[in-house]
Image 1 (cartoon, rainbow, N blue to C red):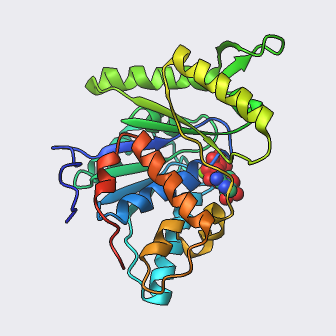
Image 2 (image 1 turned 90 degrees about the horizontal axis):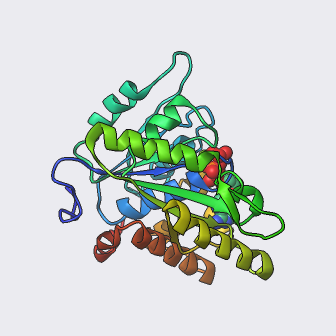
Length: 277
Ligand SMILES: Nc1ncnc2c1ncn2[C@@H]1O[C@H](COP(=O)(O)OP(=O)(O)OP(=O)(O)O)[C@@H](O)[C@H]1O
Ligand SMILES: [Mg+2]
């Protein structure tokens, strides 16, 4: 039973979708970190992998289960489901059926592939919150907006922005719901001050123009990737009975994930203390 009854919607869970038509921007990594942060606060979480062919989120979760079996640490697990477009085409109805099985959850975290597909589009259309991580690079920004090379300002929205717009319309048509779009700059470096400044300005300009919110960025940190084989995140290290030493970067990573949770409008979940395992 979840401790977060105030967070739970009366009839359905909050659906948080990680999406971006650009590959390798941190969708699966951040989806796992968010799901684990909510689980570690006693929430009932479902995770759906719409990129089952690559299967990063599914593998991350399978590794977590194996870690629990191997070490006897009962780390909290999500209810996980993976959908693939092969061998037959799965479309909106199949996703709707999958989502109907998550009604008792507090939150559903959906990971999508870094390319356009019917299944990914369907996933976007169910988002209460769409989180789009982008690497701090003009190449990544290009799928959301075209930048004028001379004036260095936003020329016009690009194909992913259009796709999100369509998903918002699909969502409004289906249940009159609205989607909150949050962009988060990921893998920020410590050194590239000039690029960082330009990206910050362009993302802020674009946010106003096409209507998304900007979350505080996530830095490049080894801790975001080194725990994959154990299916863990930096936050798990604070809850495990065999507590490992917390390095400064672990503490900073946990803080960044908490900032992300606040930016997603889920701040009340942070009031629940971490559940020790
Ligand atoms: N903040 C970070 N610090 C360090 N490494 C990171 C960070 N975020 C992501 N990574 C690494 O970047 C790579 C891409 O991340 P991930 O697989 O989560 O992206 P993705 O958007 O899901 O990719 P795809 O589009 O292929 O599904 C992985 O190697 C991951 O470990
Ligand atoms: Mg992925």
